[in-house]
Length: 470
Image 1 (cartoon, rainbow, N blue to C red):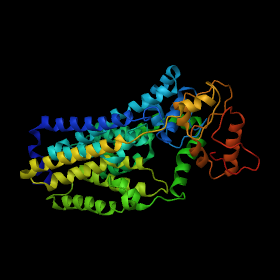
Image 2: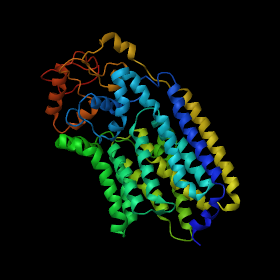
Image 3: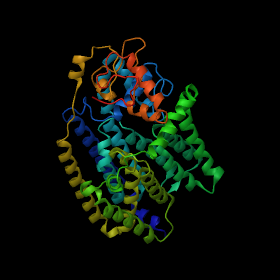
Image 4: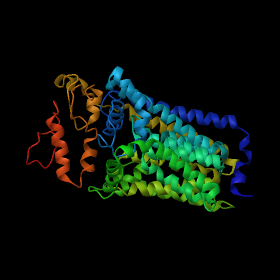
């Protein structure tokens, strides 16, 4: 009897409790995300740079500007398409309220991600479900990323949806499941190209059955990626390639590399104290648990286990590559790590100790949730809307180095014809033209010349080599 059969035999009993575990952990994730938005300034204030870029691009889109053709966007357009219905609200209510609305969507994303992890792992029983869904609910990077409109939680959502469609228990599903799962995975790639990691893992697992498994899966991926993306590629093929491909490759070899230990701390959910060195034994411990579980198996690891472990290792390797690294990047590893650890725990804990394991896991979940509540209680953000409104008239043509400043002040969309506010991502625009400094300077200065208000920048001059913040 294989390990999977040994541990999965009693699962049919107690499905109600399993779904109860999934519901409770999903509510914990939603509650933590909502609690973040209740802190001073977190709903309307400036909490991130990236959320202004992503949602600002959606606002530009619903106002007739195309990414890549009219402004730089260094990711595929999936998030902007998803956010465009909320961006439409800005035409009636203003961009400030629309930004709050898109942030209020994130608790739902947090809950759905936990639900999907639970649904993927539930066939293994109560303990793996509690461990997997619980880890997803309280993983620090995932909690932090759901306080505003960032890409990683949405990327997780579509990768998990794809995995749920692709897998039938421990094994890959039929052709239709693989096709539909591929579509979801392909759309995940339009949110962020990092989705290529789980796509590659599943593609390898489809082998050697090329026509029966690999072909429908890859066809689905191609459909899911091409349908949303192709109109933008046709409109500006060169700019799309420069923004999405060349710019991202340039970031891999950038300067100012974030230390390995800091990355590892975020990727394992560990603390950054002592410069992240505590993450090293934590990572070794996680790897030891997973390897021990696979070694203890009386049969070969299942396809589902290979997917979880392969995706975790692949995402970790991917996030070690670029020079730049931000804490919310680690949210992408959360679902795969949670599933891998949960699967390992399910294999290592004998049936006679399942109740003890459930009690320990529940106490750990309560303790870590309480710690999140403590940390979130001290969070706050600056709301600069009144200060910006005082110096920039409504409808004026304005430019700022953080687009979220203008969005939360209702100064992002201008009524001025020919306004030079098409720089939605100042940093992305700079690195997109990074190989040609003269082009970067021309872009900035031509924009500055038709902008009524750009108090965040020094005036351009013929001798300028850098545009910086006052």
